Image 1 (cartoon, rainbow, N blue to C red):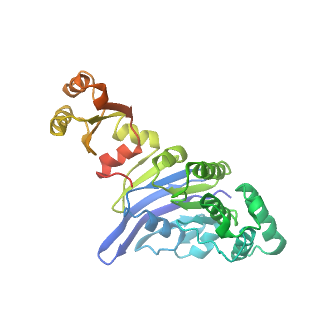
Image 2: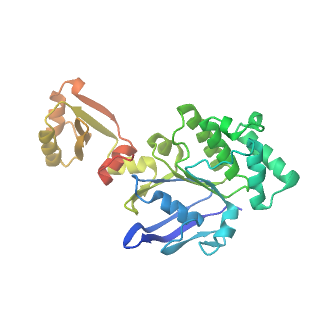
Image 3: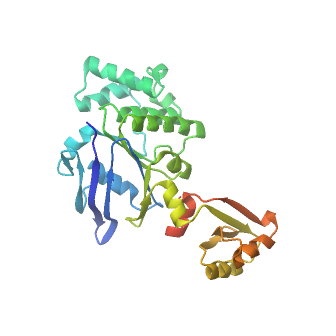
Length: 303
């Protein structure tokens, strides 16, 4: 059955420090929800509370009839988890990594072998069944970890920075698998540092800073609401003067690298007129993206 995962007022404190503060959201069947934030924002801790590895200081998670952490063991029967580490068993072949993991869900014998074969076909590793884990490329290992997470046919899958370190082709392969999970009605929660990944895959985003959700929405809605459709990067001009003009015209802007980044101003504003007078080599106009959203909301880049 399709399952909705709901987080209710999740807090996690270590001593006097609250690393997650009052996080609430729902992950619906057939939806990819992105959990984004700078390093130290509380993403991994939040994901840990969702599947019961981390016990919340306050709040709980509901997955179907199961309340987590009280019924985490039962809830995990409907979950698949892909952590940042591969943690595959190097003593087993690719096929054996799946069949042995299936035992955790009381899938044994012929049923385990059939399920392992189905998953190897799904992730395009059928011809690697007899290979040792250490002989796989990084992309193949990530696909095998995903296959292992699907052994129990979960309704919800957690992907914690699943494509970090992969080359572009391997990332594309992984994206196709994630989109297939969505089409099959699986709810997917994704944490990632890659903006193109978040914009391409996620139906909705939660933006975290210092353990709090500071904004949420679809990628397009967030970009247009927080920044606008376009930005301008200016190089080689007086940054202090640009900041003054931006403030006077009510436009967001900030020093960025060796230049100045700002939301695209109206052409008839003082800032717009100033930009027109600059050589084209000094100004670069482009579409706004999620990185710009983070710069405005948090004051730092995502990575």
